[in-house]
Length: 494
Figure 1 (spheres, rainbow, N blue to C red):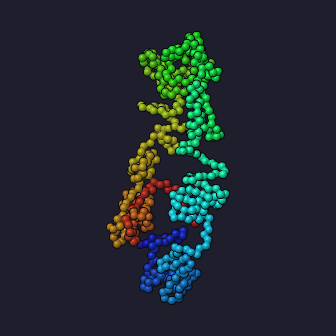
Figure 2: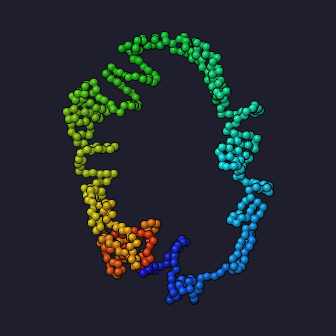
Figure 3: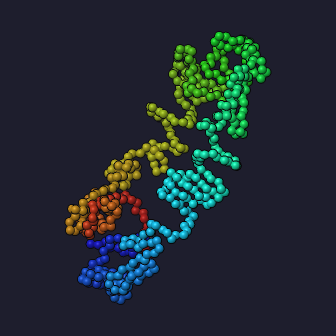
């Protein structure tokens, strides 16, 4: 049997490949204009014009040689020859350009390049420049201004520069020019023992800067050792320096950098700062009490209210209950009942979380999910998923897969009828069926019926496929159940 189409097929200008025209021993009855068929009696294709069948065929009446060609003819086998020319040779299988060109008088092109390969050539592609490319790099450029630009220029003889010499770096006997000048000038002052003088070549302004480091103790610009001792009231010890006595207050106007440990023996540290940065990620309290639980009682953090001390916010350790006590958040000291807790970060609950109400993202989470609220759900079984009518259970990927059946078709097992029947047991005729070639993965158009193999008995558990002609490769059938789909589609007839 054949697949019947009740509307035109528009291929959208795509090719109709490997098609066979209808084979008949005689012209078909009731023809329509434009219909075609292949007559197996005279091996001719016919098409229907407005009133009769006309064969498709004919002979070429002549071949005429056009420009650059010779030959041709009107009967029998004819030959066309390509005409050669100056610098062009017409051979039996090709048209070749003569290797030795002696008649060309001009080669001009905006992108002209001449060379032996891509690494070595002369390039004319840049306006008013000739570029010599050697070793896969543009080495030398000749410009219209007379300038020669090169990444590296090695001159074995003398070089006479009448203009300005510009260079990113200059070396003298293998030493950079600025280092050469610095070493030379610095050596002039190396014997000075009372004053250290260093010379630095400043290539930004082309000058030599001398930096003087006066080591004498009487210079007004220096801080002498004697003056320093006078300002440190405690003097110098063998291993330490004491600043001031017990009644003095030492003020340091600038930054103080301590590279070792800082030990404070007083009772109070006051830090009147805008920002306090501590590198250590762990601050230890109650360290001097040998980690006693009784001495740790009340340890914590207090945020002081400058107006009313009763409203100070505290985070304190309760040693008796082994818990932290949050002020303003707990009904009574030692308990863990919060009246209101706003946590901006993550919460890790190792035990059971009990709550009268739970909201996520501003939406209430219910004990049982509904179509309008999130909550707990029961997973549907494969059988419940196939039924397609349950509204209280959630479908898993495994359950969803139970609504589909895949079957492979071995074309070598097809009989003369080229019909296969696939049992899907989905319990419905509302199924979608698609067949594709397993080798090319292309869809196959075949006759599909929701019946047994006689194509007359309806079935909700099998489908039958008629290939008409056996396909060249094994195929795969995809069967998907639509059981339970809402039958609310509106049909209009015009």
